[in-house]
Length: 67
Image (cartoon, rainbow, N blue to C red; front, top):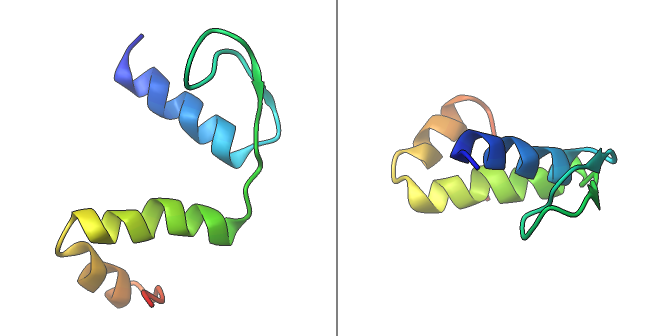
């Protein structure tokens, strides 16, 4: 499986309540988690700020709360 497909599937699982064919660990279908926006923000942006040094500055300029 290609990485782009894995990323897309991961986003579907985290963001929607749809039944997603294939999961993180195999080919079985999994129901999406439909995580709240605050939770998704922590997963996406706050982790990115830890990984990429300039990300925090960029997020502040865009108006995001980083604390």
